[in-house]
Image (cartoon, rainbow, N blue to C red; front, top):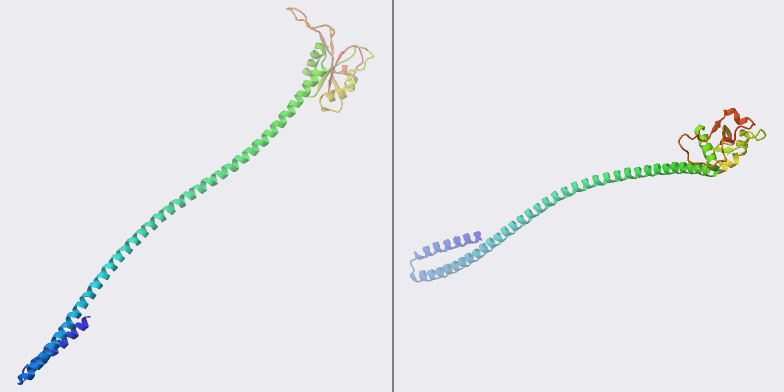
Length: 262
């Protein structure tokens, strides 16, 4: 647009100079005609210049408008980019915080898993110990029940109970029973009495104990047929005689109770 404007200026300058030269010619009529022609040409050039100026002004206004719109678009774009950068920063911070929380939770889950495994091992160990304790307790109860059953079924009368207690007092570990023996020189010895009672004793304790019952002590209880009565001060209690251990093998009227153990 600027080059067109300067071209018009040059053309206008040419025609003005040409008009001045024509004005110096001697012929008046021709000078007037030339002047009118130059004037028309000048008006045409001025009109064209005006039109070009108006077109140039419109173009400049359009360019300024486009420039403002571009600036506004650039500012809007910059604001959008700034908002996006802020959003990205916030998301980055949030992602970092979330990652820390996930790591912390993962550590807690690992700790919980380890604690769970330890608790499971403790439960298994405790269960095994409980089972072992139950087994041991049950065995002891069974043995104790067997002993009680043997005592209840084997003792007859208070004399038997007293001698049974005496046998238990002098016995070592094992199943024991106080077995009556007929006090006679013809009666079997306590060794034989105990040997003959082996199957009965073992049947009362679920076949536990040794292979054969043996005598380990002999007693003579005086007054086996008498009923027990409440004692009074100064009254003499029942009399028992304890023999030496070799009396187990002797046949004589001495022991009337044999202490047998299996």
